[in-house]
Image: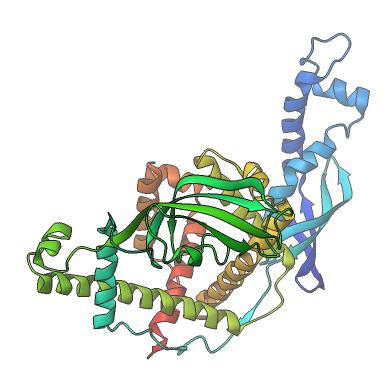
Length: 425
């Protein structure tokens, strides 16, 4: 197999002319014959036992040619693309020019990865987020812990206030007629939560336990029920209980209950350390995110839509695998969410564009900076993958070729190169 010619027909599109030699084609024809003979009936022979020359005599010497050419296309096109130093994204057309027992030639129209340009990727300026641990942050964290350890206490000596949780019975009426879904008993409602229609929670304020009363509200015009949109309604209310959230005292006893520290001061120091690590991690991730955005802005070149489509399809396959691990699949997910294949693809497209563009940028930097993975790094990656997939490293090598692993590692090093050369303030 060899490349006869490579001609650029338009941006990111090439026409490759490829020749498949006699020996390769003959081997493919023989392979196809062995597959198909089992289902061919020839008079005078048992099914599956007819000699090849007899079948060819009956149906023509080219009876196996089409399928044999299909066998040859992938490897032949791959070899031709490598020789032409092109990375094929998608093949849009294949046309056979000549075919005989001596071999065949074909033309393939291919969309290929673009040759992009990228400049000024060294010395990118990034401002690091503040990692200062303030007293306010420490207090906020401690308040969250107090909230998690709070308890609800019934109050007897006052009326309901905003922030209280009331246990109520209610029934709603429009034009003195009870409506569906407007009734409940012993319902827990936090006043000020905004869970009920406007004006409902506010009108419970000032009322006491065991009190029965009526409130009037108006349903919003955008309410989900057509029958209730914009309607005025009366609700009969009975308050059974008023509860308030009681936070634990902030003292050494509280500290002993929620941590392995003995004093409040020790606990605050631990909280500071935890917050400091969190802020540092967040700042580091933010730097990486900002660097990616800056690099994406530096990329010049026309990227074929087919690359984005391929990446979206990869992301959808990954999503389907995740869903299947949870007992669902992509089709069922779309039914539940009311989405369709087009809307799901549209949802993933922006991230797919970002991934493709960034990968191209990093691959370009790999070339410009002569970045490569060492043998030690490649072996270490195989060992890591072997452990992750619970396979032997040699088995992983059979599935994932060295070239692919080497390129992935080089791309990772390119990102590190950008980070190491950035000006972080």
